[in-house]
Length: 221
Image (cartoon, rainbow, N blue to C red; front, top):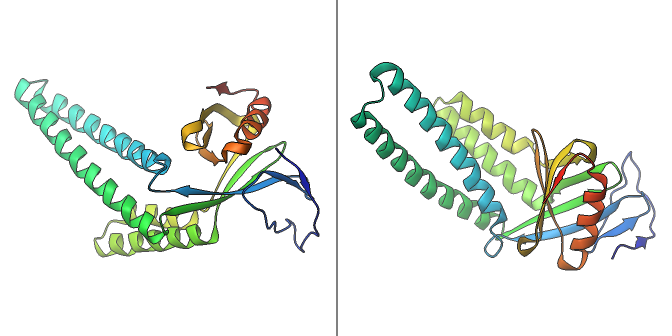
């Protein structure tokens, strides 16, 4: 359960909290905790990767289908070709997704560490210094490869990945909250932003109840 921890504030607009893995209320009036996601045992991060890849394949498949329909109509042979192409794309994406995830997991020491800050207004998910460093390395590598391949769009994606180290959710804007206990995960999603809150078994109910009671405009699952 949550408890208050005394300590001096450091200089600056926001105090630097040296928190542990239990949810506690600190002197700044906010709850803080750390959580380590085991990237081999907890598939939450991998599921998000495949969800993004799935959307990518779906969008590309839709565009291909529309082009074929406009040029040749809905012929059976064209539809069969399109299905084969989609199947190949899905297989390639699956392999690349697994390889990319394993590379990221290995560079992270098979653990994703995050620091969470929660108050009456919302919850902030911030990568640990180590996870931040790994993300920046992967993002910079993506930028370099994309520039060499003359793919400015991919380079922009890599720059975004290298710069984004936090995810925040404002409770008044949250549209959906979903608990996945077996993964120690609470999804806190706004219309155009998704957040993942990881919390230990001991504090899961407290954090879930705290979030759902303040997300008055959200669908609770």
